[in-house]
Structures are given as structure tokens and as C-alpha cells.
Image (cartoon, rainbow, N blue to C red; front, side, top):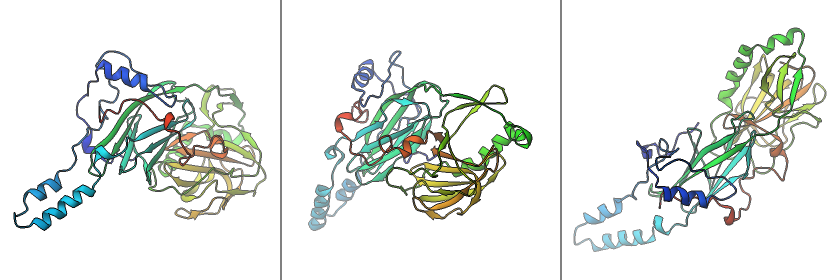
Length: 376
């Protein structure tokens, strides 16, 4: 994961919030996201990660102070330059949007910050600092909620910095993760495939693929809703809790399956760069595409992989063919969407009305209304 672009601004001790400040933030929580405040004045879930605000650079003032008295033209040039520079006080208040407003297990969370004049923004989530991508006046980022994530409140912080390194915004809120009613399936696995149920085989598969589906490219390779990667019918859904051969539930289904015939076309769900192509015992032949902004798609159990790592692929490009390699009872495609290393429900990514579009029009009335602690 990416670190904070301003690690030197992390505070070394807890910042105490008054009861009034906490209550103001609680009352002002917007966009349907719950801002939780409980306990006494010492309650501060962000004490270890909150970045400290820094004063704007005084470099121009220092330069002006050392100018000789007879260099009036140079002084005038400096004054003119300073007048043309927009100070942080003149910049509009950044607006933060968190979508969707109600977050369930397995969902993708989109964070949008509209901050004209700002130069960087980050979010703090689950102990990690995640940089947001900058596109014109908007910063965007995603993170995923695991299908079996613990339900309840989760702290989220958003920071924005201006052109002189000054902190324009620090907002804190709490996302309430709610449970999803997943189905439970008991699957019969016999013969040689039974050996692939060994937890060590599963761990080896995850370790081989994980480094290639984390982090964040510094640009978005895609624009618009994703396409289904196969023409086949969906035969299994994300999040299904699975037991094998009558045993206890040991894992969940991390993607959706498409049925079909061996050799059927598998196409890139959206534009991106191939980050991995290879084979593991559990997944068989597979390929991973990096779409930018921490979003990846994975394609598995393939009979043939047609692209190599580093290859740029366009949406709809033929990248592989369906098969039954690895732990498979018949030919099918197992397709995953991975956000910041967490597998999420792929269905919203291929549904126009549910797609987490980072460039959608947003109503300022829906922005997060909790207190901007950088200016309070």
C-alpha cells in the first residue's frame, strides 16, 4: 500500500477532542455515513494517524527581506508574484463524498474529494495511508470491504494539502459496515482435486498472486462501467460461504463464475495493463489486469492465456480462453474484482446503476458535513 505523501506530518501523540467538537462532528455527519462518537473527551481513534497541519512556507517573505534597498524592481516583482498566488484562505472548502452511503460486506467504497487548488489528498483506513488520484479539481480513491469483514464501525480519515504544503482539510468519520446474508454451499470434491483443498495449497496460491493485485497505478486506465468478461451465464455468485465434502465452512467464493465451453473467449472487462500471467495449483492458468486506482480484475481456470505481463489491453480485448485447470469441476471462468488487495463483489462493476463511477456528478448537499479539524 502507498504511504502518506506527507509522513512527516503524522502526530506523535494523541490529539484531545473536546466534547463540543465531537458532538459538532456527530451532528454534522452527512452523505448517510454514520459519524460515531462515544466515551469521554479522550476518545480519539485517529490519534496515531492524524497528520498535523503545517504553516504555509515563508520562503517568499525571507527572499523579500534580504533584498538590497536599491533593488526596487526586484521587490516589486516579488510583491506582484505574491499577489498572483492564491493563499489557502482563498481556496474553497474541500468537499468529501463517500459512496455508497450504506456499506455492506463485500462492497467497494468510493471516496471523492473536490478540492480546487489542492495538490494532494489521502485517506486513512484500517491503519493504512492510501493516496488518492488527482484529476483536475477532483481526487478519487477506492477501498474494498471483505465479504467476511467484521460488522460495526470503522474509522476513516481524509486529508487534503495545498500548494505550499499547508493542510486544507482533515475530516474524520466512521463507516458502519453492515452484514450481508450470504448463501452457504456444500461442494463435493473427489479424486485428485481433493488434494487442492489443503490449506497450504490455498496459501501458496494467494501468495503467488497477491503482490500483483495490490498498490495503485498513478493513473486510471479505464473510463466507464466494466463489461462481463464472458458471454456465458453466471453460475456462482461472490460471497457464497463454502464447505467441502460436508465439512465446516472454510472459505467464501471470491468472485463470480461464468459457465461455458473449453476454448470460449475471455475478454478484458476494461482497459488496463497485465500485471501477472501464470499458473497455480489451485487457480490453474490465470491472468490479472491492473486498471489503475488500486482496481484489478483476475481471470482463472483458463485453458490458454493470450497476454503477457506488461501488455496494455483495451476493454473487450481477447486475453484468454475458458478452461477447467486447477480446482474446477468443469469448464468455467472464475472472475474477480480486487480493490486494494481485497476481493469485492464484481456485480456492481458491471451494472450501470451500481457502478462506482469516480467521475459522476455529485450534489454538494451530499458531501460529508463533519467538522474540518484543520480549520477548527
